Image (cartoon, rainbow, N blue to C red; front, side):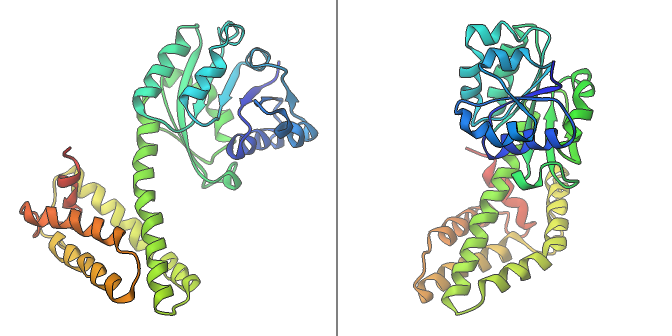
Length: 289
């Protein structure tokens, strides 16, 4: 048998497979479109002829495809599911905690072990010290596969027994990144409108990274402990500054959709009476439907 099977050879799945091959593991691979396997086969991986052959080839099956539904489509084939018994399935994808729980129940029905996970890294970072993979599920199962997974990410992190934890944290990070990507891009639009160097703006924000990281830690402690009083920056101050972005947009003739949206959230916080509190008191507005 091979050491591990990788199902799904997109950018991330291919990076996982290549990392394991380079680490000296015996790797079986499978993908709906077989041509993506050619570079990995040349590097030493073995291409399975079917999902069943891929599952049967290894004690550990790592699935890295678009979503839970796609994974179920592949494994639900009667021949593939019949080969699951005794295997350990590690599912690395995006979705919801509920889907993770449903997937775990489905896999365990076939007498297989299951871990759910999420990758917080770019494909080029797989195998590096700072690459992060979050994993959730039974501790005994995690212990069994930890050495293999640690070769994929130096910052492999067990985030608890509830199987939905990893994908929940992935979505929490995705929410942050959505604001980060939009915010940076809008900042680039402002720079462009004033003839400033966008690359230089990127370098400026990189220099602020330690401060921003500490602010994230501070907000986590403030929200977790309900410690919104005596802030260095109030919600009202931040909201007033953000509202000025709308004025800037009008003066510069650039899109205002993002600052209008952001300003409206802070305004709701001010109107609710949270203005004198920490800027992250907008949490109180966002937590309600």
